[in-house]
Each structure stands twice: as structure tokens, then as C-alpha cells.
Image (cartoon, rainbow, N blue to C red; front, side, top):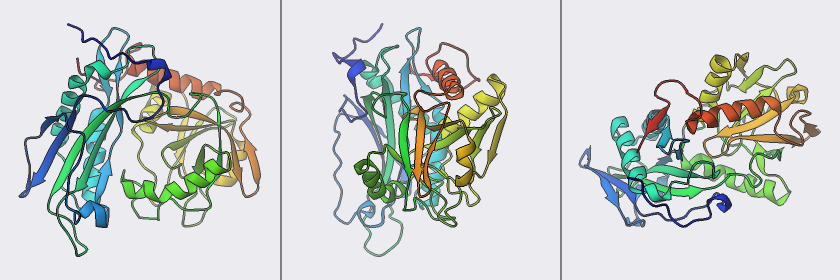
Length: 345
């Protein structure tokens, strides 16, 4: 029996928070995770001395629930989010949330908010945001002993206004992550560092920043919230790689690489990409859960503006094919690799 959907203009949704019916919550105390379950309370109460407030012990994830062509509600590769969150937690000396429990929690909260999952063809999705933070009291610099894991969900539209229209970005004069630091985990502290340069970019008419490696400021790393993809003049997909493991391992990026190599027969090269060579590329895109792929029309840097000829006015042909293939897998229009699409209801 289908659930009646909420009365929402799905096609007009922005990428913004809208409270839904339920969240999921689970606490870590006395050395173990509790059972956990759904809650209608979307507020969080904690001590003023909680570890998150002083030493930033926090990590999060992002994934989406979709309505497929045949009406099923599914999530895309939640096992990868579960693993990445566990990796992030270990790096921050937090107790990893069990990966099987993570997947079960995602299923519970999406199922409970089924009425909020946008219909197929609307262009909107249900964004799923797991987050874990230190609630235990600490005053000296050390890991806390109590934590809370939550999942909130909210229906969202496109991450960038205009959807798949090319955006203009600039090279940031600030760094996002230190070599051998925390750039390869999904921790809020990385994003806090990007807020000031993000605001500067917006004030100057740009949609995002391109961050270069902080060690030499020679190589392309990522933006504040997405990985880069490039296409060279031979049609090869070029994927930036870090010497110091400071690029977040995007699930969308890894999925697109698989699609390119194994479903579209493309040549894919993952390697460090010098900033001074991007002028030779024909397409550029930002990839991540929120946007899937957002085309980049130009990059403004210290030496002027680089424009990508095949993606300046509209998404280029390679990015279009990649994005279309992945979103068709997510929506059930074409079959993807086994285990990628997990049915909720």
C-alpha cells in the first residue's frame, strides 16, 4: 500500500532543510552503542562542556533516497557511507558506528518518512544526513567518552541554482586541508575552514572555490564540498589524486569512475593534476552526493580565466553522459552493478 505524499511543490524545492516526521538517534555510553531508534524530536540537548563544543569531535555523511521509475524507494550505496563514516570516526578517536547498524538506521528513517520522498521525475530527492558528535563532558584536551549518532532527512532540490548549468569558480587563496591532515575524512572541521573563502567567492560572483594542495599550491585537490573531474582533448576522464591523501574519497566520484570504465568504455586516469594544465582540458565537473555532477564553465585564478570549451555554455557531452548514466542507475531506469541500489520500500 502506497503512502500519500506530502503536499509539496517538489519541483520548486531548493537545497535547504525542511523538518520531516522522524529522525533516528542512538547514544554511546559506558563503552557501547545503545539500541537506538526513531524520534519525532529534532532538537539536541547537551552539556555546555560537551566535547563537540570545545574540540570539534564530529563527523557526518550525506546520501539520498530516490523514488525509482517503478515506484520503489531506494538508497544508493549506503554501505559505502557506513564505511566512510566509520573511517572518519576512527581518525577522530570516536567509536565507529557499526556499519550494519548504520544501514539499518538509514532504512528505518527513510521508511518512516516515506511521505517526504519526492516522486519520480520531480528532480528532487530525500537527502539523508547521518551525523555523530561528542556529547561527553571534557575540559582538558582529550576524546570524550559519550557520543550521539543521529540521522535527519529532508527533501531537497538541486544543490546549485540552475541545476546542471555551468558554474564559474575561482582558485581559493586559502587552504582546505593540511598534508597528512583530515582532508580525507568527512569531518565538520574541514568544512568550517572553507566557510570564509566560500563567502569570499560568493561575494565576488563565484559559485565555489578550487582548492590547491596546501604543500605546494601546484596541484588541484577539490572544492569545499565536491571532487573534481576533467576531460582531456582525447576524451579521457582525468581524476585528480593527492600525493598526501588529502582529498575526500567521494562515493559519487568512485561510482562515476566505475561507470566510465566498465559501462561506457572510457579511458580513465587517476593522477595528480597540476593547476597549470587545466587550460588544456575540454570539460570540468564537480561531483558529489548533493549535485551528482555540476559542470564548471570557468576557473578564475591568479593568472587569469580558464574556460572549458565543451562545457562553457552547457554541460559537456562526457559529463552529460556520465551524469545521465549514474542518475538512471539511481532511479532504476537502467541496471547498475549488484548492491549499488538498496530497496527501502
